Length: 151
Image 1 (tube, helix red, strand yellow):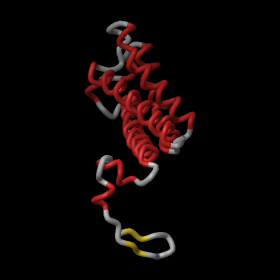
Image 2 (cartoon, rainbow, N blue to C red):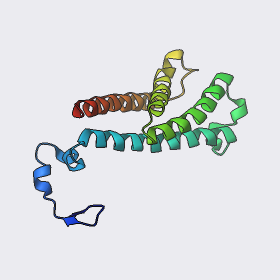
Image 3 (cartoon, rainbow, N blue to C red):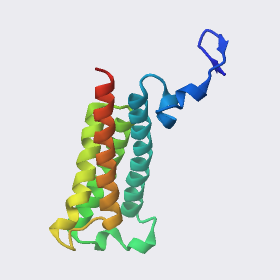
Image 4 (cartoon, rainbow, N blue to C red):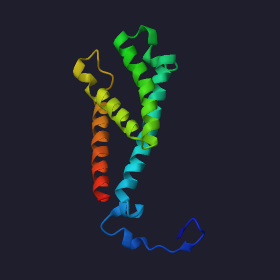
């Protein structure tokens, strides 16, 4: 059952919607746009937690990472950059603003290529690098499908 804004309730047969589209068919006629929106909102929550984690390192809440002041300067700079940029990107991605997606992709790419600068420059582990690459690939795939859907 589905109720519209004007209060009309109708019975919806989802057995036909599920044919050929899976769960995406339930999102309605703009299924790829809806999937992209849900993906961006999920990424936004992940980036909020990443930003808050970086701020926790800066203010010293987590003792397992040691004293922030004792870290090498380039690591301190990366932590402070991502503490601010991750939260800004999360807001922009949540709002589905173009600048939010661009900032989020910048953060993801910088985190993914940071191990190329050597062991001292690495900010994340292989799992984090792989996750960033997969998230950006999924974003581009969903964006492409959503743009094709509107044509």
